[in-house]
Picture 1: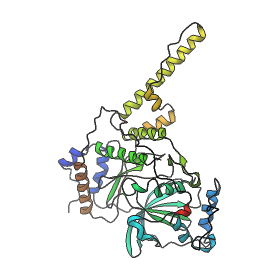
Picture 2 (picture 1 turned 30 degrees about the vertical axis):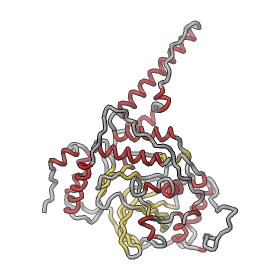
Picture 3 (picture 1 turned 90 degrees about the vertical axis):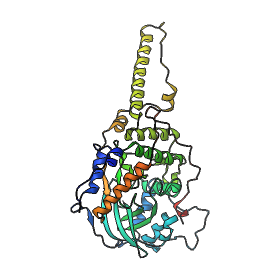
Picture 4 (picture 1 turned 90 degrees about the horizontal axis):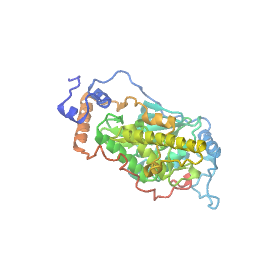
Length: 409
């Protein structure tokens, strides 16, 4: 059996063999790695108090606003009348109702059989899991929100976006949500993986065609009136089919906000600024030069105008020759804050590659070949000398934000 990587001419004509993106993908050709973070997990065991998780949810939300049913509507027999009258696993099902291809998951729990750790943040942790639901095997991404921690309400706003604004983009540019489930002191949001074989984080040295796909994905999200709010290369995932999936919307905002679900407001200016950041992070053709020159011109102009103003103090009759702010700088203000600028130009880390456990070497090599074929079939006609901000958000969202989570059904 072949256990060494074979670099073909097709590899090098599509991918830069010296790039970190290419080097990370080459691990698909290596033998199965040693012990990983995969570990078996037992069936969920609910806390002794059946209202523990619900109490946290209610207390956390009431710290900033009151989350309650509409007063003029009388509760129906099916509406929950008391938190203690129903198990958390059933209660949290009302936060998000599975739809589309996952509608069959309504009323079913997932019994996990294996779990692989992916990442951890201040509010939640992410896992790749294999489980069983209604006698079917499911591979899914599990985003676990710990009820013992302060969430900052990102849980609610993210679900709200997936339910409404991002609903049409599920399975296309954002993950397809399978459902919401409760576990021991956690709330789990189950989502489809970006790909069945592997995916890799975006990189500054990946092919231009993939950068364009990332830009297109963000443009689609913006066209729905959604501001990501924390866009980084690690939040742009490239699947084994060369499709792009944008993840992590817990810090997002929208052109049509809703304080009842903690969805903060955003503006068209926020969307334009975020697209500029995306292109800077990707090292999109012309973006870095555009931003650097814009910033330098602004700093030089400000210094010149200060000097001219100083001359009027020394010589009252002096007529200052002030430079006007260009229209483009008014529409797209330069990044002057040093902390923000440092974030935009920060050196990227190595793109992380995730390979779905349990695949043979032949399966992984076949997936790699399919990935190359997907790249080869996708041609891009980007003019490197063109304005790096040709892709602009196409208006706001036309879909209304829902009022309360009780409307989920």
